[in-house]
Amino acid sequence: MASTQAVLGTGERHVDLSGAKTGRSPTDKRVVKHSDSSDDVWWGPVNIGLDESIFCVNRERATDYLNTRKELYCVDAFVGWDPVYRLKVRVICARPYHALFMHNMLIRPTPEELADFGEPDCVILNAGAFPANRYTTGMTFKTSVGLSLERKEVVILGTQYAGEMKKAVFTLRNYLMPKRGVLSMHSSATGKPEPDVT
Image (cartoon, rainbow, N blue to C red; front, side):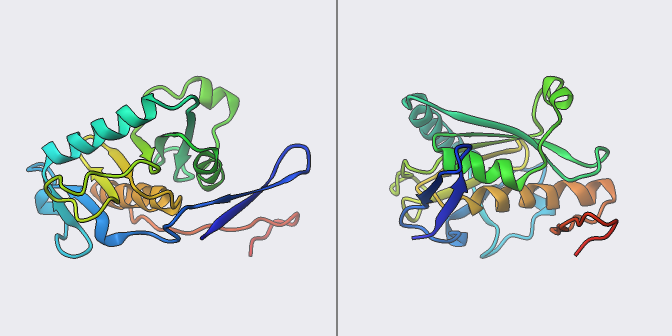
């Protein structure tokens, strides 16, 4: 099992496990086939089509599960550094492990930006501890990662591997940015005290 180790405010370390899935489940990822985006998606073994009604079934399943949780975690953050091109992302999840992962992965808004965050450009509903119904049309297993380009929503069922959220956000960004004449790149840099990066 993959684990994430976090240093808590007390200096105490906490280890969390990702469950049975220790990596992404690319064959369980589905993209809603919609007339508005269908011609712009390279359909095949990487982008497997999903009927919008099935996406809505999974979305309702995830929402129902999240509504039964005693506590939920919400992370509002940005993907993309430049304010002109960044997207506002909202993650709703039941595990602090998932919230911490995205808190570290995405760009944290300043207090002023957070106060004025408004409606997100993308919402992730992570109900990964709850399985998809494998008898639902289009599901092959209890794992389902569904992406609707029109709704700009991601629904995760049946996997607690946190990397699914990151990949889904980048997939959405890689769809949207070229439409604005921007080449989207997945990269980062670590700053040093000197004006330099590695």
